[in-house]
Length: 342
Image (tube, rainbow, N blue to C red; front, top):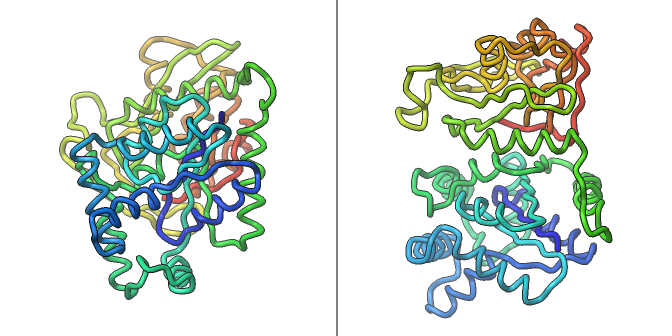
């Protein structure tokens, strides 16, 4: 049984991905439909405000993962591969992570494009002005309360991310390529991961120790199929963590020429791993570094100078550092050819 969870912003294309998966034999279980059932039972107005209100109340009363646990139970009763749509709470992702065969998809698009889509689909819960649309989304993008919506963090926890500014055909092609990976072991009793997949999964576990919610990343450095050292995003030793005191933001120009805000309080996972190796006297010449996102230029230069000969990242990033590493003879492999937006 494969379980694909879908998170993403309103109007980004979650429904389009669901429709594609239905054609591939998946059964659909929707958080939205679950909430509509509860709203109708209570006699409330079926709009987005009611959905947020009821969802938060159910999670407060029963726990952050209550809704998806209910949907998972329904999926098990029905049997077969399942897609659970509209995951919006970190607790929901964490609960489903413990289910065998779970993979999280995230989808996003430019906000103007997404608003145009919801205007066109004319859903009862979508009848809002652009200003109201923006306000609703801002309230749902982040929260310190674990039972409330935190789309930004959920999207950051995704195994595969899709930027849906393409046509439906292009989006489905991207999803199809990932689905082939996810379902590649159908029919076999056990799917044994490759070494790259094995170390990448460990890097995700390492990332859980990260202390900055703007980018919870982890890193593994391995050689001859053995882990040499690990690292995760966090403040330098002895300094306060972002999770405790907040972020220290600075605008940075990326390799694509776009200026983006970044937290400069923390040390990146790759930097921490390389420093840890130096501190412990562990030689990492000729090793392979595993990380979720393509390293930034600073990390790339440290990787080059440390003697690491190969980098495996799950997703691309806008840093432009891949070319820098390849010029220096460092091989870069990307497992999922999707550009992560931050």
